[in-house]
Image (cartoon, rainbow, N blue to C red):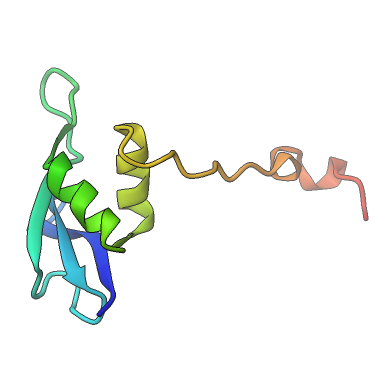
Length: 104
């Protein structure tokens, strides 16, 4: 069984709230899960702070037994030093207008 660490969406329209869960890769996004390992609120509070709560011991356990994080979860875990930060997608050609790019 392949276990994924991914975000489960809660909240309402235009006000998302996410639980970070360990789930079987075949389960639907908001469906059955094995364990809740954190929460993520992307809407900033009045102080401008986005709230993230992680159970680091459980996250390290799931990563040690082979759980694969989704792209967004890997980015969050990279910010907190649990995983090495994922490589940034950098394409200098895309920063140059098309008319000024060199043709290859």
